[in-house]
Length: 520
Figure 1 (cartoon, rainbow, N blue to C red):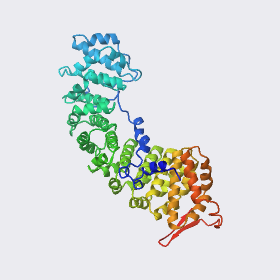
Figure 2 (cartoon, rainbow, N blue to C red; figure 1 turned 30 degrees about the horizontal axis):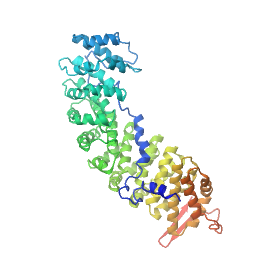
Figure 3 (cartoon, helix red, strand yellow; figure 1 turned 90 degrees about the vertical axis):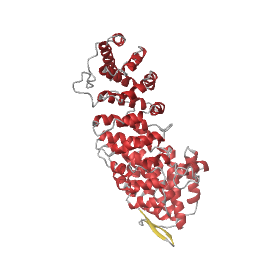
Figure 4 (cartoon, rainbow, N blue to C red; figure 1 turned 120 degrees about the vertical axis):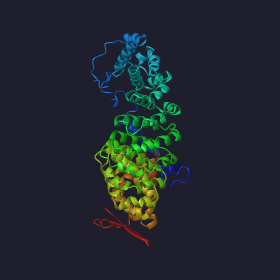
């Protein structure tokens, strides 16, 4: 058996097996950090060259530049001179040239523009409501600087741009207001510190005031992205008061049809549910769970993935929160996602399943009834390693909380054979989780008085050889767990006297109350 502290650590990750009530719901939060961070590669925290939807056609300052646009005629020295001149025309030309330089795909001169002392001028231009062209170019230049590193964003904030941009949200000129939305999204995307500064400056009501039936779809896309950045990060989480301000609009966006709006709204919900049960509850109580389950079947991966992530977070919560997702039909959709062509979707679906399998036996029965065992066994056999790892957790959680009859059904489905085959992997943690599952299956067999037959079955499946080999494993916890299984269930002489017809593929666990077959 595993050493006590290893066992305790693993037990505390299951819904119903750990003894400490405060730890009961934690389950696999630490195990899933990688899954939850994966999005950072899929959806940029900051954006530089996006197209404003609201720029007037006749506007000379078009965003439709190409990356191979001719280099602006003004040098940085010329820009400094123009921006610091008294002529509004020269100032506008200087800002525009700076913006074009800063919009370069490769090596934009962010630091050079900052070192030239231009940020104070740019921020002062943001307040010039009577000079919209200058205001717009300055806003754009600052937006591009804020899209850089944390240091670049810090320079923009420290020059006083935040209150100026929030004021610009109310501009009657839509393209200027939208530019401010974009800039604030970049600042919020930098991390929790600037996110909370924006929230303290009342950015949320100012952003929400821009939502109306007349707001163009493109503007709403940028707005949704900025709101999603205000929901992002969990060290610390955004204030609950801010979450409650944002949620009604996010719910509204989730009922639109535009895939970009849906994607960012789903990611926002995934950030808001990536926390303790109280935070999950704030989202669940809005009644949005059925819509999220519906979006798990969306044909766009960019929508389906964050919807699945959100539901995976919700089923990592309490039994009641998990049941909300089950009642909304999540178990009807998970099998098709577990068989999805993309491994990343299979992995997330298996992770969600493992969280549901950590529930009470009533929910485990719903997994069985909805046909989750065949796709689970398929993933154990054929998934990529990251997916197999999640599927292994599902099996162990299942064997921890399931009834004896349910564990028998799991073995009959081929799961025991599949996890035995995975004992060859190099990952010690996965091996420990598998050995824990095997031990749990033996505990079920003990209740039926069938341990000797299960020992023989494990041996016929090649499990005994593999468990014996693990007694030579470098990891001490693996050695202890493997040695414990051998000592307890495969002791000398225990199964030698048993004769089983080699052509017979049925092993029966019997008790007065139950009769089940282990069939392969």
